[in-house]
Length: 194
Image (tube, rainbow, N blue to C red; front, side, top):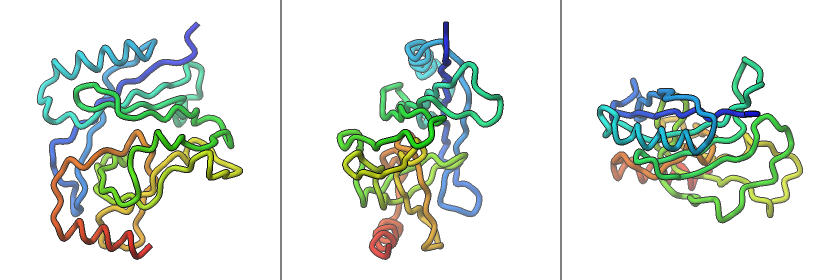
């Protein structure tokens, strides 16, 4: 009996700036619900080779959803990210429904470091920023953590020095859009001022 399904989301970005910001607009398109991760991955690879405007595909997310979950906000059982060709990037395998049950991300599964300039999928935007803190690890011995704590702290390009966002590892990507030297220096200064 199936206890979960896998939703395939295609994230598209045509490089259009979001209104009055340095962020990029992102569109999430649900490409299907599948009975297994393998079927979702196969559909993703087919989609990547057959889609219109493949240059606009930014990434894919495969979100595992409980079949018998509540109809309100969806709390993921797991999330995986893939590049536009369908190659695996990152996974958050902690059940978002479980409180106080996350013990930290293994160090070898943390692929960025403090000071890296990255892009982050934040709702319907792709934000450029600098990593200010890493996800907690088991060695940090935090007494109470849940899946929402598995995140990077990112300082985005912004005029507000206090702006920051917490982004799960599956939603953080290597820098793909060009930034100016002034923006790079501004992010590094923002990090030093923390």
